[in-house]
Length: 494
Image (cartoon, rainbow, N blue to C red):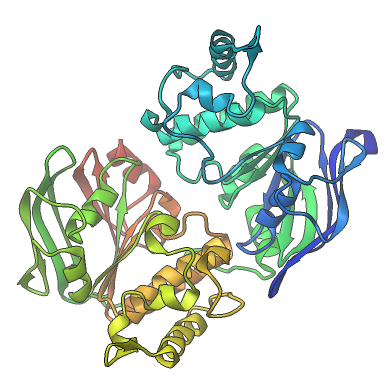
């Protein structure tokens, strides 16, 4: 790239944390007025680089060159003043406030010494109209859909007159239709001169949106190249440092007897006449659009949410009114959709998270034995190849893929017979995805069963023995592995 076309130059950036070198001499450029992809496995250093650019972290060495000038941000506010804005994976919105109040949070407009509410509402409407989105600027943010919250987050980010917008996994929680709306917004922003750094584990998005792509691996810069010059297989190879022969390594296992049977399950306004069964050695997939009732079905079966009617049998025994605590004792487990809020206690250590539902194995005479906790947790850290500096590391400091493995390890230590896995690879890189799929294979080879809920159709098709399709709280179809296609699933989904 010619120097005058470069908006951002990452100049030999390095940063270390206790036990890990997050970035090691990273060096690449971003062309002005383009959408630039940034990809890599969990732990590759993407988040650390974003936080340096956003003024949250200070690099140990190296420089950031923005618009030809070296910049050294001490605070996020300084980064924003320089024109860098970040749309984080977790929304940074104040939910009790209105759309207008969120867009102008921290940067209110004033007129004659008073807050100019009329002017802010007018400008907020203009921003939304320019993006082609119909949102009432007086709506309370907590009442908005996830997709509309994402749009408010984008408006808030660009309201600082940003010239460089960094988007971290922006599509992770959106439906297919919502994703397309967001992609159109990105294209409009880019057409209007905005430079975008787009971070995603969904490689199809990288190919669809970006002009150039940078690959990080183990904290190092591997390559930056035009997106048109690389295919999916090559990009994966650059990310993981090896060739992945099969992204969905489903193994054929003999299907055994029925372990779990659900008949006529109803929850008023949420679920209607849910019927399905799960067999030993089987991966049962649940497909459907966001809001179709997949997660609600899992929660009802596990006793987390109440049901109005229906019958649930486990190994021939009626467990219809079991609580979640009793379901765990009965051999059921849940890898939840939101691992950070529901699957982990972020401030607890890795070993504490792994052992938290298995206290009976580490408590003797009413006392927790640290040696037993270390023994069992180390066994699963090694078995699942969880990358962690130590067993005492807090879960919040692990990458997304390794956090997910910790959640899975918790249920493997519990020796659960059936594990419900809700969006098991959301926010997880392609290499860690394959490792999670291999863990599923190991479970079913041991005679266990997996119920996999996923919004990624290639994942559902690649790893399921049978697929249940849901729409508006009902099961609208059942497909076996041989007959299922993306088209047949989507026709049922809608």
